[in-house]
Amino acid sequence: MDIIRLIKLLFTFMFVCAGTMFIVISVREGLKPYRLLKYGLETEGTVVEMYKRPMKVNEKSSGSYAPVVKFMTEKGEIVTYYSTTFTNFNDFTVGQKVRVFYDSNNPQTATLEGKDGWILAVVFGIFGFFMCLIFYTLFIQQVIGWWRERKG
Image (cartoon, rainbow, N blue to C red; front, side, top):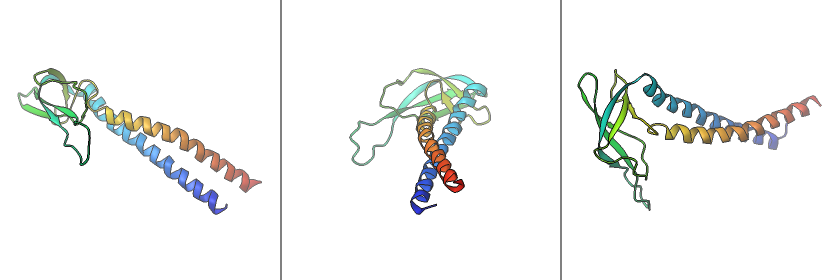
């Protein structure tokens, strides 16, 4: 095998691994809100604040916001949940009632109904899917070419 073909194979394999990692991260991150929605306890919470994501240096955007929600557990404990889903869209307003799903053993582990907690999983899943689609195809073609060259 010549050095150019080996470099191409290793380069493609690196992207195959990266795409696969994106898919694995997507599934792992997607299972968290899924499990809370399926097995968690449901309650009603109130948006008490819209937390602004700190702006980065030289950022031109006006910033994005995530809701801060207070809810009461079945044990009567008041919990403050800080969403990690920052958007530029005003999906929530202070005082709005929202459905919250939480882990009864760890109420700090919670998610809101809707896209809260799903954005990372979806973005990583789409990106990983396309990386795998492209680079698995290239990798398999390169391995088949190498195999034919070796046999022939």
